[in-house]
Image (tube, one colour):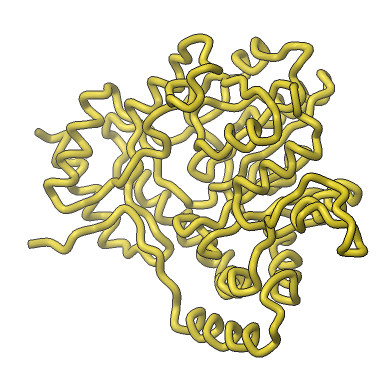
Amino acid sequence: MNKSIPSLKVLFTDDEKKYIKDNIEQVLDSGYLTLGGYTQEFESAFKKISNTQHALAVNSGTTALEIIFRILGVSKKDVLIPSNTNFATAIAAVNAGARPIFYDGGIFPDLKSIKKSITPKTRAVVVVHIGGFIAENILEIKKLCKNRGLYLVEDAAHAHGAEIKEMSAGSIGDYGAFSFFPTKVITTCEGGMIVASDDKFIAEAEIYRDQGKDASGIRNILPGNSWRMSEIEAVVGLAQLKNFFKDTQRRREIISLYRERLEGLPVKFPSTSCKPSGYKVIITVGTKKEAAELKNFLKENHISTGKGVYDVPLHLQPVFKKFNKSSLPLSEKFAEIHICLPIWRFMKKQEVERVCDVVKLFYSK
């Protein structure tokens, strides 16, 4: 029997494990467990990935978004959010006092739906780089936001290192948020990062991150929270940065191999000229029934596809029921017909080829 192929493996090299062990010991010896030198080093290194002037580490991607929304003053305002995204994107806006207005789209945002959703109450538009792919129309969305006086926020939770037209994910909009959850291409176990090139904005975000305290550490001047990243988490993130660009290229090569091996089959890959992060290998098929049957066939052949990127669009999630005003057909269709094929940074060519052979076998039948 062939060995099972999981949808994802979270792996560390021996060198990375040694770095983590040695430097966690340094953290414990120092007595500085948060807001110390390792966090600062991680922030400084991550600026090179996002190509922004500032990076601020926090305890999750959700927190990164909430702090951004709070600084933008979205309370009692509308924030446009793609329905096809994670719960975190919308709940961060809700927690900051905003009303999430869901707009339509598949893997990429639908510009017409964004335009249609803008009202005088709109404060910001969020674009999510799903699976680590940046939409071709991102600059059109940016122009629209500028013309309408709206902030453009990038939810780049999937997109560490993704690029389009020589622009890095996180640097395209006004502000960006990243996640370091275990499944991401860089993980700190739990954690997130705010990126920006606005000095005043980052200074305020720093205050929010540390219980809203001013420089004295005594006066609480903003309604912040304990949103800090620990030094140990920063060490785990730093361990992966030495190999980050090499790993990103490897994941892109895996996606290219999938494209090459599945060419001619009735499956579609995201249509974009971007250089993806390699977080997900996303394909779409013709119908919901076909997607279910292909997933089951892969499972029968010991290949796991895990969950979809998002199986249920946010406008259909019970927690956001009161914000759901209409159907969003592009989001609903994408949720039904997309599949995420296995990928991780050390995935072997033979493993990719085996997945492709099973997909080919499915369609031959």
